Length: 169
Image 1 (cartoon, rainbow, N blue to C red):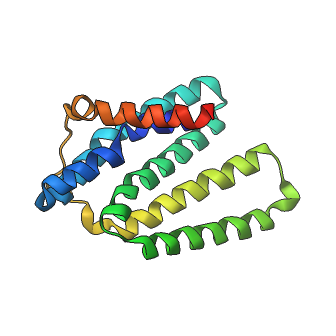
Image 2: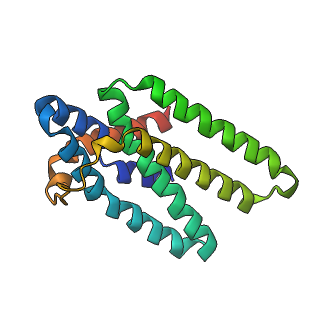
């Protein structure tokens, strides 16, 4: 999951922070296009998950990765727009729902239950951020930008190296 998330993010936050600062009038268009351009990576890594796990686990991995995709996608807006209070509210509500649901299912505690709960937790949190930042998605100007992977490669590499460094320590 951690390695898949690194690829799904593909330098998202660092690249977009720089891009937002350079062209603030294009934030909605840039963010929306970035979201659509990186979305196929979610499906690619989910398909890989279907090859390694049973079908129902593969579906839960898809939900989990899609939730993580949404959460990481909106991190850049949290930082750029300084929406830390909104972020704290989403995180707190989702965590409380997760804990209450976890408590409710404690009698049927197994690996699949944990995977279901955690996947839904990630998805609900991602949807929470989507609701908070829905005004930043411009459905009329969304475009798939093929050159994104090339122009953001160094930001992706920086992110991966930081990830690897943190795991080595």
